Structure formats: C-alpha cells, structure tokens
Length: 549
Ligand SMILES: Nc1ncnc2c1ncn2[C@@H]1O[C@H](COP(=O)(O)OP(=O)(O)O)[C@@H](O)[C@H]1O
Ligand SMILES: [Mg+2]
Image 1: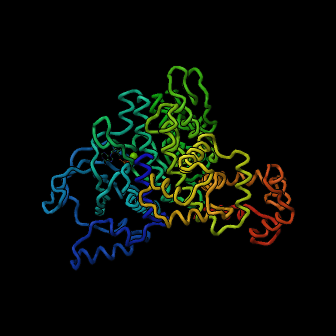
Image 2 (image 1 turned 90 degrees about the vertical axis):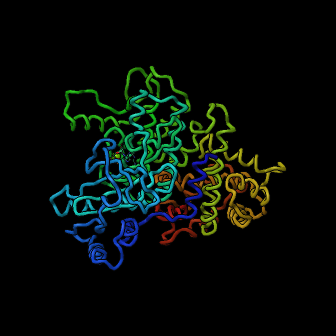
Image 3 (image 1 turned 135 degrees about the vertical axis):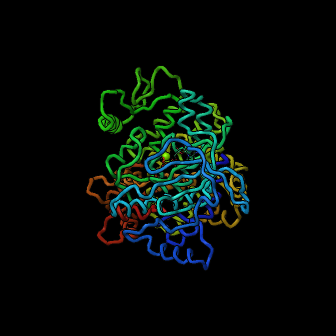
C-alpha cells in the first residue's frame, strides 16, 4: 500500500468530518492572541463576538502586529486576486522558529466598499482558514502556523516551500516524464483523498495551487490555497461558479456540484503534465478574455473524447506517445457524468499510480488496493448492522451484473486469495486478522470480529468471496450519490420514480440466484424499508439504505 494512503487513513481515524462553519472559539485558536488581561485582549474579545455581524471590521479579531514576529521579504509567486504571498523570517528570539523562513499570504481585507460584499468576503476568509487548519496535517498539504489580523489585512503564516509551482515545472520541462508525473500525481491525489474524506472540496485545483517543498527532483508536492474551498455534505450541492477556465468541471458550469469537481480538474492537470498543453483551450488570440473563456466553457461542456486523434484538442494527441495506463486514468477522470468519474480513493487505486508501474506488474497494483478493501469492510460493518435485507439483495443483483470494473474485481479476488492462506475457500477470523494487519498494524482482534459479524451474511463464522465482493460494491455505491441514482433507475423499471415489490422481483428474476425469491419475500423486503408506508421504495428511502454514516 502507498505510504500516502496509510498516512491519510491513520490521520482520518482520529478525525471527524467537517460539517459546519468554524465556531468563533475554533477560529480564535488559529488567530494569535494578545496577552490575557491586557486592554488589547479585552477589546479583541469584543471584536470576536461581533465578527459574524454585518459591518464588522474583523474577520475574527485583531492580533498583535505580525511585524513583531516576522520580517516580511520578497514576493512569492504572482499576486492573486486578493493579495500577495511573501517570504518571511521569524524575528522573535523567544520562538523555537527563530530565524526560520516562512511564507505569509497577506490578504487585503478592504477590497470591497460594499458592506454586503465585505460581509461575504469575510465569511469566505473564515472558511479558508478553518478548512486549511482542519486539513493541514497531511504530508501533501501545506502546513499553516498562525494567523494575524489588523484593520487592513489578514496574514496566514505557512511553511515556506522553495521548489516553485507545479505550473513552473511543467512550463520549464514542457512536459513531465510519465514516471515523474505518476510520482507527483499520486501525492496530489492523496491530498485530495484526505480532504474529500474530511468533507472538504478544494474547488480551485490548478498547477499554480500545487507547490514543491524544495528544488530537489524528488521533493514532496503540497496543495495550497483553500480560498475557494467548500464544506461538502452528502447530498448537498454547491451552486456558485468559480475556478479557472481551463480546469473547471462541466457540472460547475451548470451550477450543481460537489467534491467530484476536483477530480475533473485533476484529469485536466494530469493531461497538462504529460502532454504539455491543456485539453480545453482557445487559441484565437483575437478574442477578448471573456470571449475566450466562453469558448473554453463550451468545449468543456462538449466533453472529452478518450481517443487518439491528430491535432490538439479535447482528445489524446497522436504526436505525443503516452502509456495506456496514463491515458486510461485521464479518461476516467474527464468523464462528464459524475457517476462514472473516479473518486479520489479510486484514482489512488488506479494502476498508473502503482508505485512500481510496469503496466503489467499486477503485484504492485494490488498492494495499493488492500487499503480500499479494508475501508470497504469497515464501512460495510456500520451499514449492515443496522440495515434490512433489501440491501443485500440489491448488492446481489449488482454482483451478477459485474458492477465492479475488472481491476476492482481482480483486487478483491487477489485479496481473498492472499488472505485465504489454507485455500479452503473461506477466510477465518485469524486469516482476516493476518491479512488486515499487513495494511493496518493497529488492527485489533475486536475490529476483526465486528467486521466478520457484519460481512458474514450467512452467519457461518467465515467470510466467503461473495460476501467480500458485496462489501466492496457497497463502498463503490456509497462513494457517490449519482451512482446510487443510476442503480435506482436501473431497478425502477417503469420509470415511475419508485421501486415496487414487482420491480424488485423482476430484477431478482433477471439474475441467476441460488434460491428463488418469492413474491411474499419481495413484499416483506420492501415493507422493511418503506418508511412512508406507500408500498414502494422512493429514492429517499433507497438512499437511506446506503447512506454514508
Ligand atoms: N507556502 C508557500 N511557499 C512558497 N510559495 C507560496 C506558498 N504559498 C503560496 N505561494 C505562492 O504564492 C502564490 C499565491 O498563493 P495562493 O495561496 O495560491 O493565493 P491566491 O489565492 O492569490 O491564488 C502561489 O501560487 C505560490 O506561487
Ligand atoms: Mg492560488
């Protein structure tokens, strides 16, 4: 398994999903404080208590002057929309960081004269700092140190990274070698897997917002700039359009999106990394900027053609040879339909990102997949223990329809084979323990027992292949509402927006089952989940069968 996945998973174990804007006290912890009891401290408390009100002069509250602690130096990167990034050196002799170099993002708070715009802008700044603070402990996300605020500016003090933007490396080398691209891209996806698992969408992914820690060839890459980041909640969508034309996802343009928009942007970035130009662009220099943007948006909405063709556009160019694996990953990220697009977790499993990517080296690929199987098992445990039998039947239908793709099915099969040490076709508790221990040294026998209890549908004390497959399918379904909607449509034969007992029976009849399911049994299965008692399952009820907990 990749170290990145391991790190992310172990960090995630100790963390809750972000579901709400930061409370004042959470923000206050990020802001530098005046000494308690001083008049400045008392004033700051007052400011803080009023910071959510319209007309407040403070995003949170005033802090001691940044100039007391840091000497600001030369500009880093190019000035953005709201401010600039500068080098800074710690000049506080009492600090353990004395003389150490940092980066400071100075944001001009007074960009708008309008009170309402300022109010919304301050809200965005609170979100930016809150989300950065929530996510910054991942090795591929920039570490922030503190926040300073005065009447004119907000200052975010971060680790200094001297390796430059991903954008600069791409333009310098024209394009990356595929090996380098894979090594860098894996880290980038790992950062996304982490923030998405926490319930954060970045919404402004582009090569300028990834920077290298150092100039070394094997330097880490870090995600920065949470200025557009949003809290995403299961089944809730954002509507405002922002982001940079080249990288923006089609559903963002239509005004209904969630964290999947980040994965589209990642597809565009990977394309640029290996081909050296963006797939959606406008080369007509005579057009004004807004006209060019419009032309790009139109191309994005027409979608990506996953084929090799001559010329340069939204397809793979004939002139640049790139491996099959890389093209496959790009085409799975640049899918217009969100349900078909890879999630960050699935992208991490993609063979192109396997540590030892020889396109045929299945061993290396499968090592990375153990993590997702472990996650499936854990998630399934939570689901199964509270859910009725209907879910198991639906998973059964999907199993027969080969709902997982080849590499996902193979991964489950390989995991099963490796875990089933004595080869008797079942995984015992001891075997499961040994298998899980390889990817998670902290796993306990208690974990194993609870997983086994949940997955073992026929209660024979062992896990069989079908049971393992079900847990993996459930995980895939759970990872996106659009996928659930697709499956719902599949079962809703007459398109009436509900699943009746008859439709369920039809679906079960269409596949080969070990034992036939009677009409009565179908009625019962539906009844169990039919909360509003109308005899049918609507989408809300269907969703609640699989809802992420
Ligand atoms: N920690 C850092 N170390 C070095 N350079 C940085 C750092 N943070 C940002 N930069 C540079 O400053 C630029 C702007 O910072 P960013 O946070 O993306 O602000 P904006 O919201 O204006 O895009 C980045 O693209 C990068 O070049
Ligand atoms: Mg930026």
